Amino acid sequence: LTTIVSTLYHSQQYRPGEKSKIRVLINYYNKHFCHTKKYMKKLNGKSAFISGGTSGIGLATAKDFIEQGASVIITGRYKNTVDETMKILGPASYGIVSDAGNMKDVLELKEQVLHFTPGIDILFANAGYGKFAPIEAVSENMFDELFNVIVKGTFFTIQQLLSLMNEHSSIILNTSVVTEYGSQLTSVYSAAKNSLSSMVKTFASELTARKIRVNAVSPGYTITDGFNKTGMTQEQITATKEYITPMLPFKRFADASEVAKVVSFLASDDSSYIHAAEILVDGGYSSIR
Image 1: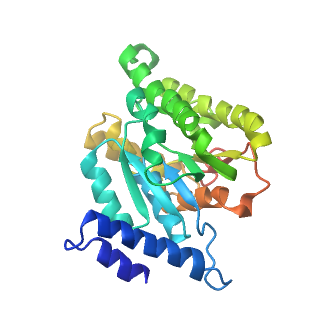
Image 2: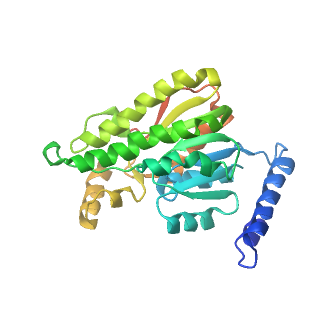
């Protein structure tokens, strides 16, 4: 049925209003007919929000959430990439054009989310990227850019959507393995990601009474398009990967889907007693030398 509905949804002969009816059909089916143990999925009937969901770990997580029975709202900075991602994800997905580094966009999130759902069960604050430079070469613009997206964007995304979070819901932040050690050229990026680690603990403390769990996934080196956003040339990216890979315990980068499965675990009832935790998905890199 999911395949049939997805085909119908993306058919050009259907008007927007009719597509909405198709969405209702698939949601009704998931709610009322996928309840047996054989067909039960970990996130069945859940409503999820993912910032930065058009590529990398965000996109992989959106795919896994939907596979596990959730409907997913994703954000992305550009309309064309949001539209293309929704075609990939199918009728269980909704898209919002929003830049985590733009406060005007962030402050409009709640109103836009309410167009699709009255409440959220899973919030994955994923938007962010890295830029790297020696201390002397860091500009104010680079510093502000990373802190606006990673720290300010994450904080206010969660703040704006907090009133929509259902009881027993889950908030997951995307930190980084760089919070585990000091590394050259990462002074600003590490500071921003460590701020998120702090948020996990303080948010968890504040939201426990509201029965909202707060955790983080902390990825190591992962196959994404993240390097393309660093300002490095393709030659520099290739050289960096060739330098890093032999130092990794398994001699490979993680696949984004491997990180996504940990996010899905933290979003599900299987992790119901995990709170204020930061789970490393780095193949042992931060612990094994």
